[in-house]
Image (cartoon, rainbow, N blue to C red; front, top):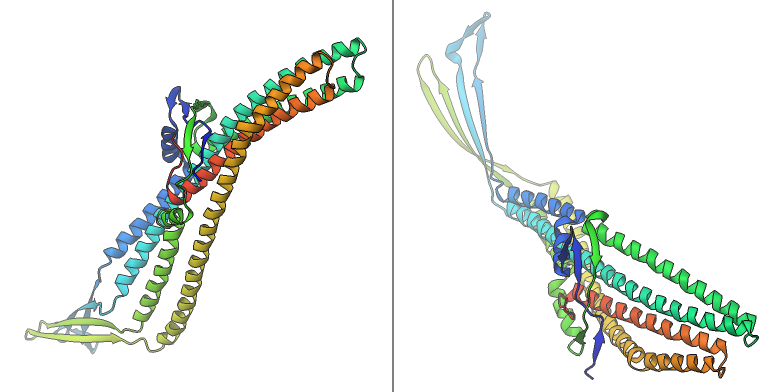
Length: 416
């Protein structure tokens, strides 16, 4: 069934450095200023340099020079016997060792980019959640102040009635206690607002003096009928970085296996020699040689290493399947929770709240003409404002669920 509900109005204006910013502008400030993101970016740049280094890893040429056939007779040096030998040795890549090293370095770099992306997503979700909580705290504070005004009005009436002997002292005491409780709640709300502002400042990495928040909101219609679990899961696989990281980790192990297998392939070196004997007659000689380094003993350890990598690959594959199943069920639970919360908010807003408000007005009038007890009026006042605050809590929960679904799928179900 298609359900449309008035949800929390979602137009934000911020004041940063004495300027007004939209929520998207604030998110830009967050991406530019946040130190955690900067740190990950630096790490990513380092891995990029490592990848580029592997891509340009050319085989070095080894050069050597030696003097041969030195002869010393009767402590007299004989220069005619000297030979000068010049040697060059070049390694010839006959396996894919360098290729797989490059691929492993590339995967490390790509994973760092995914880590940066995920960190941005998580911090953005936290930032939006704090903004919603801050706005709702203003609404709840205003609601509690309205409740306080009504309680004080009722308190004045019951004290007048008590002074004329028409009310009991317990009613006066109960009224005073409820007023004190409400005032304490307002103080707690103000404390929570300060904490939320500090958290927002911390995420944006600006000083408290640089940040003041002014939130203006307009009502929007939200249609959740298009939210479908399987579709969101398919989008999450493509959007959420953890999925890509798990695929990359499996590929990295495969490259490690290939690299280990290549250790079984001999290393081939091509050698060139040139020998010069300058006297008594000038003589030249050239030589070409091939050198093979056979990994006879190291191959035993390499085989065990491959077995280890294969087992690790199976673990990574099972972990990926488990994670996919976990996210799929998480999305389903969130959607069920979303629809249930919307129904509860709808019930409070359109039925219970209106009836309760009318009931308070009627009881207030009835109490003034002594037709109802004060306790009934007091409990009705408390109930209606508690319901209003419960409604705000449901609204906050709705948007946080939408933020969670956006975090995974990249799809927005609200308009900022």
